[in-house]
Length: 413
Figure 1 (cartoon, helix red, strand yellow):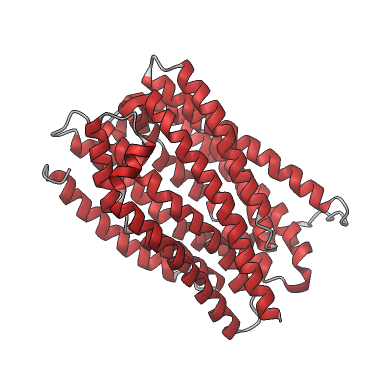
Figure 2 (cartoon, rainbow, N blue to C red; figure 1 turned 90 degrees about the vertical axis):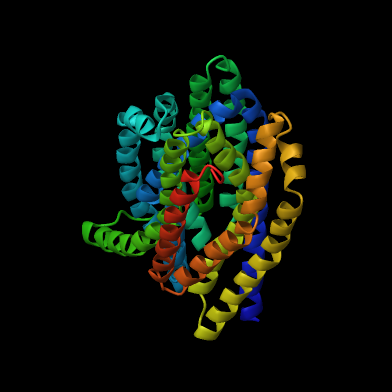
């Protein structure tokens, strides 16, 4: 009976978070269509250039918090609720401080980063996106708190809220400053800052409602707070390192692609925009939906009573991932021109053809990236925190060396 209960929680949690992520990503894809029309190839390129650095800063400042907290809380047994509050209290202080530091870093070095990437006009986007790092660091501990308690609804609804706010303000600001691609891209970036602030407020309100009838958590003394902080950091560091490898690879992409392409193309920024802002956005939709399976797998595996149950829950998560991702990859492979023409019909025909070609080449990555995040989640749940990191470092190293060679070859570009 207990095994069935865990199975139902895994399926139910994955369904709720998967549905929420799907709606959020669908809104994001819908948003990207008019945004690309307003910004154009160069504008969307400027908009996309800031995200690799932004994502890495998020990872350094606490993107590993949800998975780390989820694992720690799920293993708390009967004291789970009290433990969750204590970890949330400690993590909010720790990650908000880190978020403030990295927000300031992004603001101060906005022009330096833009120049290093090959287009100084991106500095405005960096500046207006910088406060979002701090707000995300308020969002992630709350998500980890709820996920550790196997309650995926707040995370799902906060993701949808983010996208709705970003869509409304992003299109508004992009339209207002459409006469200047740099300012329009910066306006769209500022919409992300607003959306993260709203998501943080939403999760705080949900948390307060949840604990309203519960006993108030007494203040932690210094020794107790240090103990919880130490455990959190010990778990969050390897999880953060796992999560930061792919974003670091994307940072390398943003520097390598634009700078090398500038040597023999005049549309380097636009091409990078088509790769990261169009093709990778579509690839990310089914992968993000599978995140619901991965996020649910961590507490399901970590909270298992024995090794046999851990294995079963891990296998269920992996099978669910394959069953969902494989048809999605096949669809994008065979219908890449249709997908691009349907979603991005406003792009010039040449850009649509380029994007469709990229999407077809990338389609197998739907399965591989989805499996990667689920396998990582299962390993984290089992306490094997460093195994996925080693494998991913090797994979990204091969990818980076390969792309330098391939981008330098005009036949591939």
